[in-house]
Image (cartoon, rainbow, N blue to C red):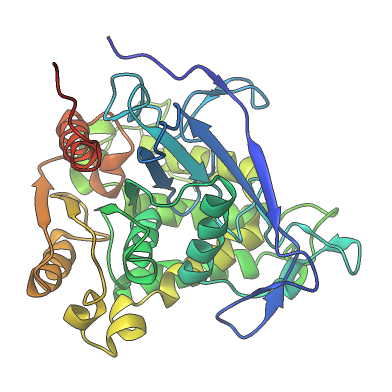
Length: 386
């Protein structure tokens, strides 16, 4: 019987105190910094069972259980993390932190700049996926974990998984990148650019200095609607909405929202405004657009980019994901195999689109459970009965 980790609370780790600020890839430095994080399960005696979970674009540290300070809101991966689940907290010590540049407890554009006493806004330096991972590495140091068993994440979290494998090959353990890519396509960049422009064209954006005045809510809601469409699939939208009308039996023949799918997207946009900072969305989408594993680690060669990696990989894609299609996962698998890495690959037939890893998905849970079990057995000394 699967259950939840129960009531959880967020913890905070601060580092990079001046004059020891963190140097960023944009050639600027910043400090002090804070990462919000949560942990589930128990670290074993030899500290070999730690699993780092990395969140997608608008996720946070609250991956499992029920948050005491958020009206018992369930974690974004509650379907995957917990006793008896795919990432079994009876066996693994699970860590999830909010990324650098985020707005859910970690330092980002909405945080207070200690030199001015005001939110950073656009004075916050641009961060990269690599900067996020280097900050996470500081957190793992703080927790006293010499090597992670597995690093796992989907979408932008999968980018961080790949970055861990390239940047910390001796420390990252095994790796599970899910529904992700080694670089954004022109189409993915285009959707992010439209979303950013929607925010920056909102009259309340005020060049990012909107704190205390009200968020650029209209633009931010539109940005979320754009993003949300890319996370789903045509089949998922057809099954859920098709062309059904919203609360009426005929067309309005005006500019009201006639279709259920339109009302749904508006609702998603409005919810998002209340929980996320618009500037953080600008920064994080830009970080995802900048990510290019082949350029950073391979001088343009994806095979070369994996030459330093030592991880065993489980790469997962979804048949209905048109944002990061299976062909992109197959390309990274081919590059891994050229370096004689141990790679398992699975395309899961699932209709929910890019977000297929966030909903109940038994095949994915079974894949992850089996892979983690194999990894734990490889680092756990056998017990002999006398």
